[in-house]
Length: 301
Image (cartoon, rainbow, N blue to C red; front, side, top):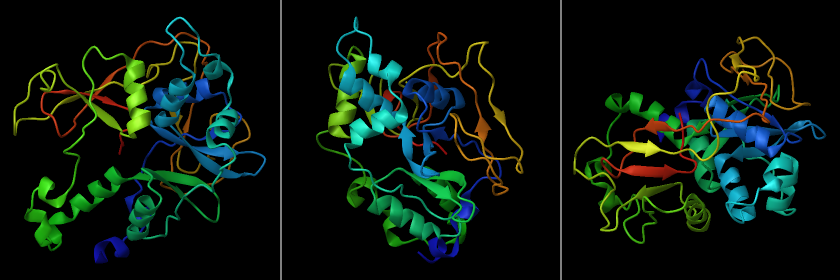
């Protein structure tokens, strides 16, 4: 606890990182193209009228949209084509708007962890209270990575020698899962109804698809829900601006101004009306060896 209280959120912000900001007037479809194209899972939302950040858009929102409006494979989801981010927020939140939970770069890591747990969120925007600029998005994974760097220099509590099951960490009963032939829309429904972020893919016997080897190297196949990482030739490529450049966002009306040295914001002009290619990526996961995972909103560094 002393370690967490002695380090600030600013200490954990990388010297170079990518941050995409959306204006709430941007179309939902274009916003998700930009998320996938930039390889990020979430973006702060900027409200031009209020001149402030009002929320976050994540892959989970995309899943909720598909789950809510999907009818059949033959019916186009017009809501996805036409809705703006602000429209989706009004329908989804139904007037239950809450202020965006964020934290100052000068706040301690202890405060950041407390805020993540208290508000039951997976992402915590770091916003400079003076300039109003978003600097970074903190996640549990990023905090754990930072903590791991100093593990050898810190005293280890007794519980560190216990196993995960004894500590009650993880899910061991009523586990949500899918089969290799499960329709994607069914998987999305499970994400929404069970409020989980990943689903193990198992065969009919209950074994992990692809075989399982206890204690072996864990490998997973991440299937992002959405469209491709690559943009078509008609779209501009994303560029990481220098540390002193103004903060830029996808969509009109977002702030442009000075920001902290460690904040590097990606500018991306997306032509969302062009065809996109299917995209899939690979990542290491734990829990099932040699298996496949269907992931909705897993954390990134």
